[in-house]
Image 1 (cartoon, rainbow, N blue to C red):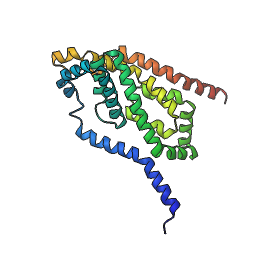
Image 2: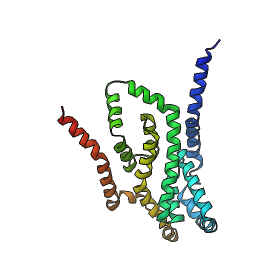
Image 3: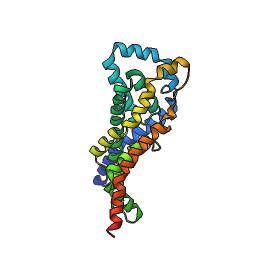
Image 4: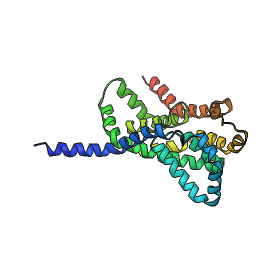
Length: 245
């Protein structure tokens, strides 16, 4: 007869992993099926209907938009950038960026929770019990969690889904993850929301928005400055550590 304890543990482990497995499955399907629906062209084609619906049902539009943003981020679906532009197009830079940040934070929290529940606890325990370079890296991250969390949110080169999953595997507390996500994505959200707020003129000219604007000097330099501030505590700790040797 099979060991009932092992069977129960196996079932419990699968139940914990199920939310993340569902997210990964939906993400894979969405990557191939939703590109045409969550695109700039789709936004351009439906802009008048969206504006009319917003004007007639503002609160419903806000709640529906945030819910859609949560789903896009939680399931890592294509179209997060388009959703951010839509937030600016429908609601202006303010309060549009706030709606974008709330939706992105809630969606990121959902996938973070699913990943930590499914694999994060076991992986974190293995890393903690390991030795050598891997353990040293984990200890370094643990000692500078706030700085590292803000850094991966502020650096534009770090993919959003990576910044959602990595902390889940490093035993980052939920509260820290939520706070660093909310405030860390604000600079980028403000930039892209402001681009979305100017889409009316872009549509009128038949052009496409400049999504590379975040890498222009007057935008990227202040963001890099924030990155330096976030990394400063890490550098200070490293210098103090060397001086104590």
